[in-house]
Length: 420
Image 1 (tube, rainbow, N blue to C red):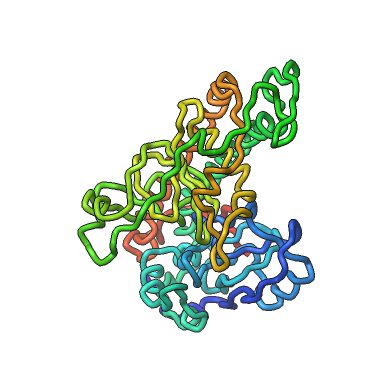
Image 2 (cartoon, one colour):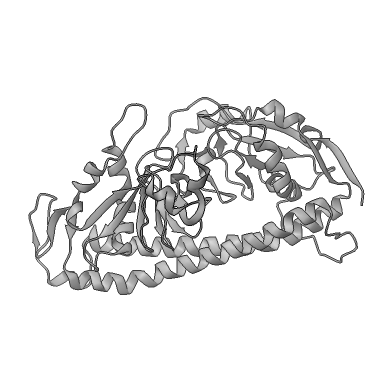
């Protein structure tokens, strides 16, 4: 099977990156995508910032993302994250590399899979520099040697096989988003707009939070939940890591269930640090760092680092659903109360004193009946996606390397893979 050896820039029309400036951000406008918006090989357009069309024109004069291109985070904690552009939506990028493949040499989608392959990822990450801010230069990326299938039709067959898994993952991801929106909409209608079941018969009364339904109380968050932070065992002691206990870092929080972690710690590591084990279904909040305000729900007992706070209910009715939806609804307010000039920090004091409504127990039970099945479905779909990605990731290096030969397979590669 013939392979081509070249540099990345030889296989592409353009290898560049987005702006390094910081245009003024707006409430609406053109999406402004940074590395933290590339999550799980998907571009998060829902939680990004926006810039004006005038600033967008300035940015795309340097780098214009288009359908069929690949984005690659080459700066910061997200280094190595990549996404294939499937949309015609206009957007700008900051501090993200942009690869525009030469379709006469390399298939668009095949290039993306090459970029996320363990071989390429390992080669790039081994050459990163900078301790506080990991970095791989654009010049290094351009000159980086790659080896890929010579036959473009073979490339397309490989991309087609792998795309089957990604299409299923994307479909499940859309379903997850719908379920999440349904759950948040129920929370907002009941506890923000006060259109809960039977609200027509309940009188509104004055409170320190404005008009609220009669029988509801205004309390501090700490009256409903206990909070506890985690810790990081010393990196100097190898025996603290690689144990039986999942250990969560803030970058693993993405407003969903946490199914697995990059690292684990030992009992000894927990004893020698502030880390502690939290039970399944605990809601976790990132209180500082790049992911400040992000949430997660434990799908297994796990420990966290000190940048995470665990939310533990004092009453069974105020479980994961209310805590998760309340914190997501009030995320911006909590971040706004954060302190620290160099780095915002949502202290536990701020969280504990945050004003919260205590609805009647019967309404909380109704919320559980409505929302818990939605959250369970989200968890199931996330697990399916994890299984699909695991299978794809087993196949990917074997297909890219040629260990699995597809040249003689009758595969229809005419599906919409974003080819231009």
